[in-house]
Amino acid sequence: MIDIEEELADHLTRRAAQASSHRDVDAVMAESAVVLLRVAPHRRAVSPWLVRLAVGAAAAVGVATVGVFALRSDSPRPVVAGPQDSAGPTCDVFIRPEATAQEIAGVGDALRQQTGVTQLRLTTQQQAYEEFLRRFADNQELTSSVTADILPARWTFVLASEIAARNQSMTATFGSDPAVKQVRCTPFPSSPEPTLVPATGLSGGSSATTYQMPAVTRQASATDCADGERTVAVPDVKGKLLRDALALMRDAGLFVFESGVPAGDPTGPGATVWAQEPDAGTLVPVGACIGFRTRN
Amino acid sequence: MERALETRAGPDRERTIEFAAFYAKELDGQVRRAFLLVGSNDAANDVVHDAFVAVYRRWGELDSPGPYLNRVVLNGCRDLVRQRARHERALSRVVPVGDAAIADILDDVLNGLPFNHRAAIVLRFYAQMPVAEIANSLGCRPGSVGPWIDRGLKKMRKALS
Figure 1 (cartoon, helix red, strand yellow):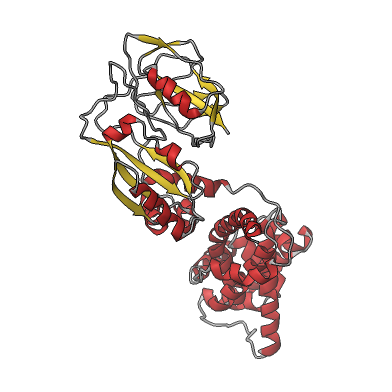
Figure 2 (cartoon, chains in turn purple, cyan):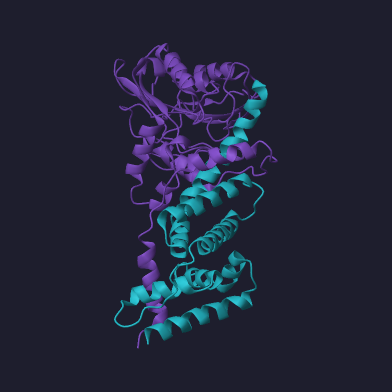
């Protein structure tokens, strides 16, 4: 006696396996375009988690761990090690997926004009997609839901250490470019093991320190911080222009790490500091990390 | 004008990304289901892609695009089968006898069933949908689904006996 239900389910599965999909989402959307001109605008505002996950994961593929750019002080105990002529951090400038080829090229041109930018190379959206597929080959649900056009292209370069150590902030330079989504840099390749600063608001592990700012969790960042014996009082920079605040911190022998990524804080010429951590007056070791929140 | 285009770029971008993810997730399953109902790969793809066009037109208005897509695909399959029946009167409804393979018998019984009965069986035994979801997809009462499935199974048992 045949179990008809089981047989039927097997039969349908075998038959269905003979079908093949003609994948062409562009055609679907193009065919809808004429009608779209007449319908009300959609009301959804939030993109699906999967896409955000995919974009975030893709962004992580070609990048190191850090969303940080350091300003190095001229303190008597330099805490960023490495010879002056060695290569500095590797940086990635992620381009917004909707940027045109002209805008992507424009960012590249601007980078070429930056002092100390070396080994500049472009990873296109398609190349990023291929990286993404390789990286997440074991997660078919994720890879099947992502197309090349939603992943960011990126410019990658190595910054000469002497430039990085001085005061050049790529985040500040490119953070306000409308074509740029994000700037990320690794720490100095030759830097010593990161040491955490024993100060309020700093916590974490060895290579991925979570830096907690007021109401915002900063992205994981590896930092090169001092554990020196000499301490300095953190200056009060609230209300000051960001660039002035940076100079004050530098003069005090402190680092300022700008991730600027999760909060999207401005870093342009008009940006001012509205919060800092640790608070002004806190005694911290020379070379300690100070976080800012900024606004225009 | 340029400002208007810029204003549209953000939401349109979101819309495109959302829909592309939905399309990628749903396409294969929908094509396979449609294939079981219409019996042709090309026709199944046509029906499913027409349904995606309909969904995209209403994207953002739909709280649950998945069930809506199911319904549009099933309606498309139903229309196609009706159209085919009108134009191809000679479509076989003969149940083979003798030593025909079980698969052939099942296919023929399925093809001979009214569309709703066939769809209910495919959604139940292939897509593993619960009765309530099948009823929602077919636009009928849940109480109708069980008898449709039972009648289909009864015919299959009879043909195989």
